[in-house]
Image (cartoon, rainbow, N blue to C red; front, side, top):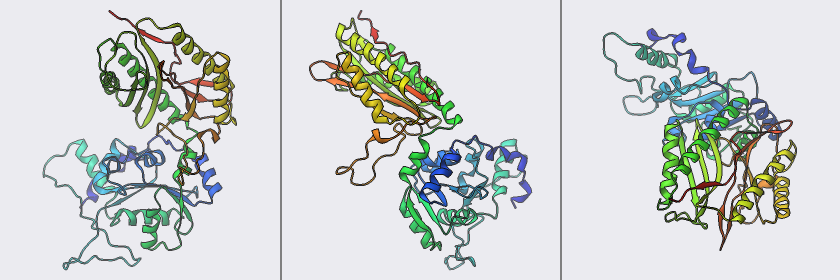
Length: 435
């Protein structure tokens, strides 16, 4: 019924997305851990591997969408998704050559599931088909029907059996496969892949993502600039009497106008986020927003009225010392070396200060974290290494009881030689007038 609407030209764009994943690095880490593939089940990693944003996952429907990247380079990478969301490929395309759709299990008249010869449940190929009126169809109708026709007769019964098919076709059904959630591996074993070995890949994904591809850097540059524009707008609203929550709302409002999403704008006066602004206050603004899944992260300090000499000197020192650290960072340097260098430089300027470098990307903190015994043993963020393609911030918040709260933060790209500020790096103290 649907094959009459088949039109590969109409849907070619659904497989022509820019590839976000760092394939060379992903292959390297799969080799390092002896993996024959990686399976993404979280919205963030599905987006990273496939370039497709799985709407079901973002809705809070776990295990409805997966992305599978095989180690064997000539094996097909696969996006697994429900048939009823196939239309999202029109505006959220993928680069992956294989899309494995699923509907629901086929049942006989008694309601019993019909099984295929390979031990998988037969799929109901008529499920999730939208009703159609007779008459002329417009271009959107034809594109939609062409999408359904492309996968007609190829559906699996469930997401796990669709993923099972992807692993078999991707030459990864009998080896070690990395999963964010080990339950998925167990479900695949129950579905007949008895020789599959599950490996926890929570941090493997994070390790791969620590070095960005050129398309990712482009998105992060835009995210940084948009977030800074939203932060500048929020700062312009600051005056005595404004509730701190309204400053955060201003940041979010501007992000909406700029085509992204404001995540947070933490406004601290003397370490707290409550109350209203008063003349003479100074405050930390730590702002984060996202554009097409990638995060912008910028921090500034604002004084309402004339600042004290000490505040001016601290912000000037933050700017001076952070620039020295940025200049010193090169591929191979440890995060903790940058942390120690900043603290030492600030001490030479007469200030106690701490910093916390963290990667920025699809997550605000886009680097591995300790996943077992976090309160007895912790893998420090400082143990990670800067590489060419690392995008990070040197987070420099300071709160001192009896004095107040300040902050400086910009997004930095590490290059083979030198660095690039993805945000403006204008860390000067912002001074708001008191009428």
